[in-house]
Amino acid sequence: MKTLNYACPKCANTTYSIGQMRATGSFLTKLLNMQTEKYSTVTCKNCSYTEFYKAKTSALSNIFDLFGG
Image (cartoon, rainbow, N blue to C red; front, top):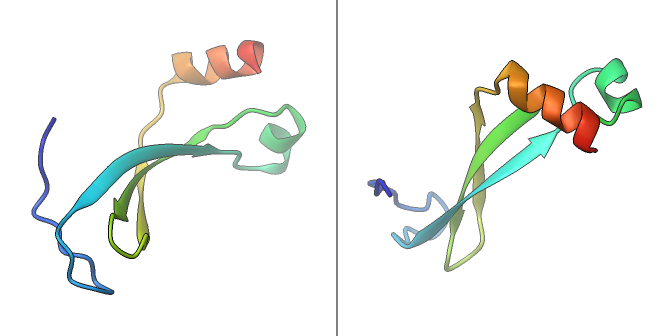
């Protein structure tokens, strides 16, 4: 796993955890319960401040999301 040169902008702590979050985009994707938006998260382990970074999604993962729920 790649390490980041990260310092929390709130408390200056340098320990963090990385995660992912998926969300719906437009009205149609909300209606079909498709999570087409993907974000990477960096969360400070000291104060829990979280930053979101938009990530690319593939058409195949969107299709699996449609049929998998």
